[in-house]
Image: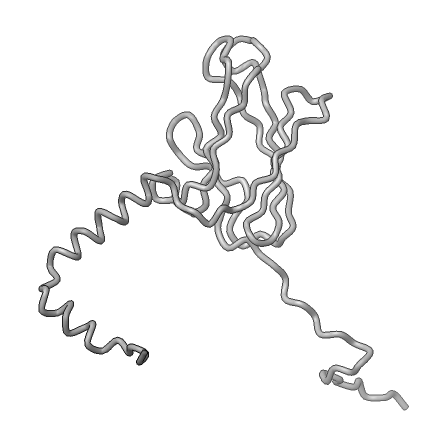
Length: 172
């Protein structure tokens, strides 16, 4: 006689609850020479994850490359959040498109990334770890300040006085 399968969905002390998997909340993109953003780590990727991209020079004997990293899903860089900008110097000289640079990105939870840059395939690479600063650039601060100033001009002084009347004040 065959036994019926047991549907044991209850968790016992021996079976720990499965932790939810961490995923990338936003795509990590790189702004390329034609002005578009190319996704390196797509939104929803299970973390930790590692992906590589090959970059080529746009000019003969190009001295450096600027990596403009952004968080977001748009192909338009201005629609994405500016995350980090790295300048790679001392690029090996060569014809336009002949110098290949491999950028490997390791993504971890909390928007922590490690970039490994290799100028040649045999090279171990240079490593940079990027943590979010949770700060804003000067231009972002100025844009917010301008928006607040724009909104503030519509506030009538009488409204400000009434709003203050509702703030509880401790007695001395």
